[in-house]
Image 1 (tube, one colour):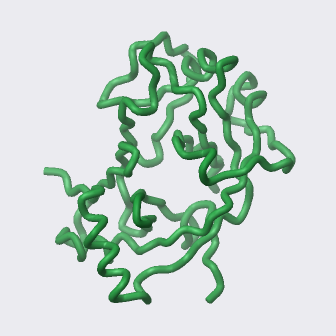
Image 2 (cartoon, rainbow, N blue to C red):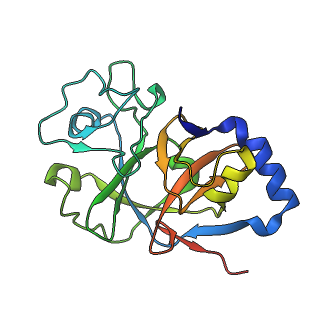
Length: 210
């Protein structure tokens, strides 16, 4: 049986954070993110070049042989909300692309791009492991809002999961991914999702000075 942190736990997490303010910390995105925005013009191309798992299977579209896997870092499984009725990725969806320290790619969809990010005129890097046709679609976006995070070990104790147990988080928008023991849960009154760590801090974030 999987240990899953879900939206149903949000009330308990918010209550604990209110009573124990030192259990949480504020973080901000410290640099622009590489993003591919799905548009009417590139929808079919992006959908065929990215392999996104939906309910344990790939959507029924003609994904190309040299396509790139999405969500592999977190073993994520994405819900139908990311896809249009014809199986293509939804227009307006943001495809976030992070290059990790070892050079591997952490690619995942973001349904709330326009609500939390603004376009940045920062230089667009050439991402070596990304096919040229995808590199041509990359733009830079900067997250504008601070986020509140709690260490996953604390969240486990709140919801009654053993600290050593493997845990999965189901984000508010439906995606699911594995959380390492050294990771953070991001939350607010409406959202809940996970961020794994690299070099002792949440990937792509810096802590707000107190």
